[in-house]
Image (tube, rainbow, N blue to C red; front, side, top):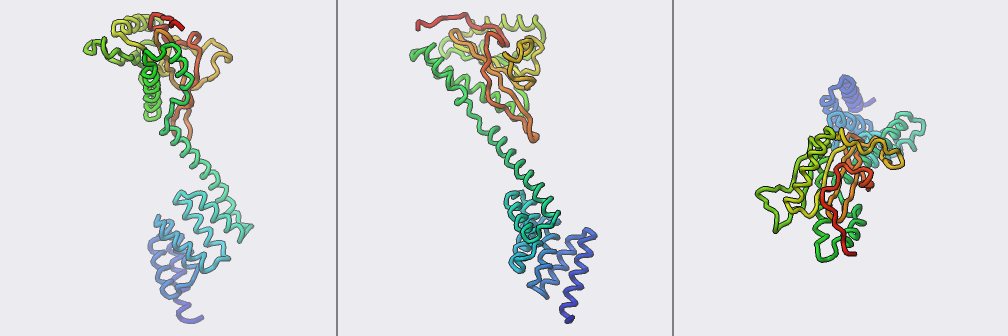
Length: 321
């Protein structure tokens, strides 16, 4: 063995010893010294890639893995190194592709097979997390409430602006969903659509908190009486109740209805009840937790006569149609 070759082997062996001892910085330095003497040695690049990976110098590790492959395209180790680095970069699909090539060069490798199984799961998980993030950030309630437009226009016609009422419902629901996504809760409150001309805004606010309303039949009844008077005195055109299921001790409108009427099982979530003189509507927005994230599923329309969380707030009026 030539003198230069002996030096390279010695440096590589010293590097390996430091690597095994967990001193990756020293190991990388020794592999670098060896590479200065033998710059086309794929094993040294592969070893240094492993050291850089442990040091979380991922771009350097990837460059060394690529060089390993270019120097010895038939050697599975270069592709394995590349796969490990791409995995650390959370580029799971690219990592899988690299491990796939490693497996072609060494079909017996259980190490590569294990990696591929793990990565397939990580890749699926990552995609699901991204999907959930999309669901959480791209809230488009309008598409779910589309059927409501024709009901409102029939009830209110063109002369009363049903579009204002529709926007009001959409805003309330989207605000509640955003709050649920950020804090996993919503405040129990009634939002009133006040009359711009008639309402005395010094006296009447557009939001009334009702967090105690559902504690007992007594609190429920007194809260409802107050709200009904409030709706009248404030000249409100409509109201939207938002109530998280978790605070409702009474009335538990999801119980005793049988699965035929309550199809949402034990789902957590919140109710949104729309009240107006001509139209009443009720939705339940179920919630799920997945991958550590809480998110709202699509609103479910409920029968307001079977599941109302508050009785009718406005005196009923009938349209001429």
